[in-house]
Image (cartoon, rainbow, N blue to C red):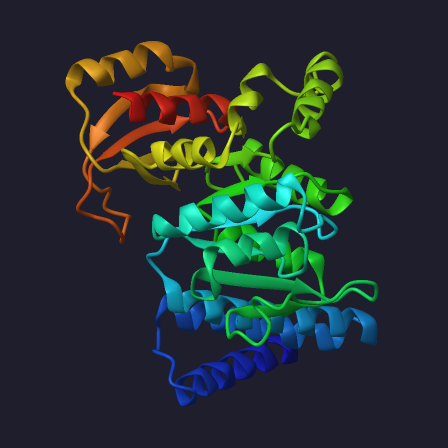
Length: 341
């Protein structure tokens, strides 16, 4: 064994002792992950990173840790992210629609997440009330970091980086609604669609909506069809990934319908596990296998209990199949069919 290996063994021993001293459990998955974090940090010492790179890594980790700590206090509550322009005036139809939507979805015991600035973000918090709201603020030199509704609330989280902020939007949302906005709004919406389209995020309702008489999203959808679909940059099934709502009530009905029977999904090794609140009949299962066979890499869609590798929501039924890992727009159609049964 050379000096480098001896040094590495000594470091790993010291890390394990440090984790135990801090209250971690020896030989636990959590302890192993923390050990990996520490080892990764120590490797930065020998790899020639400059101060700016080290600051970015350090600040990003701190932002993520703090944000997860805040959200972890509200587990088990459905949450929706609301995107839209910070410049929308309070007398605009979009503002009124956002406020009405957030008020009504809060009545269904959902919590709302916005970017904490003014415009649509303020409307989304006004309707939901302070108690049902999270604010994910970004530091910008030309805008107020937070609006008066959420200012000073412990659920207001300040971010330096857009990428950590967007990660928190996605990892804590059960649905997304986007109102008209500028580059930032479209960036957030397209990131959501990209992550779902590529299987990097859970499938969830993505709703686009605006106030009475608006044509923003109709033009946007025409652009998607006339330029992206027409040039084969996207597939027809990708249009299943979003829904153009006609009103706040229509948007809420669409979101709640998605969770009528569907609960959640995850991959276990090569299998996609779809958790459902009520079992389906053998006839319904046969129909799924007939209509969505192209999503199955091998075998067929099967009804199942929780798999041995799973450790949560063990008491609800499953549908399990080896997925092709593609065409998530059609997976969304499969979920819609399950909810329609």
